[in-house]
Image (cartoon, rainbow, N blue to C red):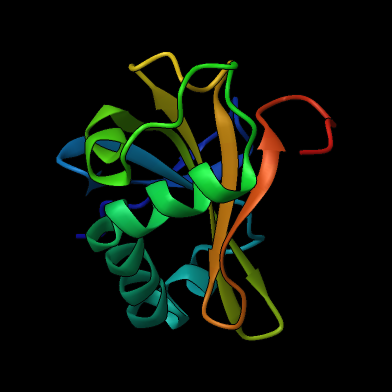
Length: 135
């Protein structure tokens, strides 16, 4: 039986998943559950890359996002302070993009930060979650 459920409030399908040792709900904004099933292997591979590259993601954040004026932390230590708060999967013309929001318990980031991972783009900082700010 599929663990994929439809969340009417979010108007998205959802699937429980574990990322960075935390249980998260991954949201899929697609028309039909079959779109998820047709791409499940590629989706799982993309989520696994996000999961196992926490330190590299920390390096991208430190390189591309402005902190709060604090001293820039070591990427390895900074990665320990990061946690995923929201995760979304987008399917676009055969490519899977994982958009995820991270929080930082060290205080280096001023707010939650949105990032995107795709095979063709790697990891990119999108911006502060919920804001249209340039970084």
